[in-house]
Image (cartoon, rainbow, N blue to C red):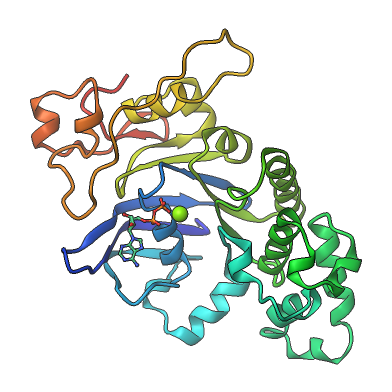
Length: 318
Ligand SMILES: Nc1ncnc2c1ncn2[C@@H]1O[C@H](COP(=O)(O)OP(=O)(O)O)[C@@H](O)[C@H]1O
Ligand SMILES: [Mg+2]
């Protein structure tokens, strides 16, 4: 059975201008110990998908359709009580900006402990501190930092504390939403390696969200490329890197500098992502696509399996 199965998920935000179609028919599956990379430019709906996976939605969001199965149960049907359990032991979230998650007036130990006690009240009576130390070591930090306040730590250390909190109840799946984006490149690389190590040690599954195609190559078994609220390409990461089929995926790859290959000018995809209130008809990528024909401007391309498990929504795949 799939650990997570997202089935034709549709989520809109209500605004005065009209609904923002942030998630518009997304489907994917994730098995035990697998990592799915969710890739796309800023504003395409990645964090919106994450917020549905954990049902931490802002007031103006509403789920229009679809299912999110966790171990076969549709969590979209769950009430808040059941959902709280899923959020710790089942699906846990590493947020984009660590500083907004950590409370400045509590020491690291208290914050991690709170995450654990929420589940296991017995912890309050003593063995908590050693469990916190274990978690801090797990993310590659010195246990002594548990006596620090967040402002006494560097950005990279804070991000690791946030990861430790997400792991406090040994979740089956970690959803990591751009966990390294706010950090410098060297720190990004270290956090990424640590996250991979922990994932492998704990046999966790992961949904790794990023706009950075270089990072995706390093962490994910499966890749889902998102554009303007929809998936345009999905498949094994190696297969997509070997042979990207959708013009958008190809564009993303060309805009990424090759470390080993000959130096060539970076090609950036021209234009901007569309409004999600008034998305273009047909293929949402057509206004930016060099291959677009009249059909692309009128009809929405279906998701078609072009190679084993490799799906593409395009009338003119490369
Ligand atoms: N609470 C909200 N109300 C209205 N629009 C929102 C809200 N949150 C996000 N959006 C819009 O939804 C779209 C998708 O946003 P998001 O999921 O954050 O994208 P990403 O994580 O890929 O950058 C964007 O157009 C964004 O402006
Ligand atoms: Mg985001």
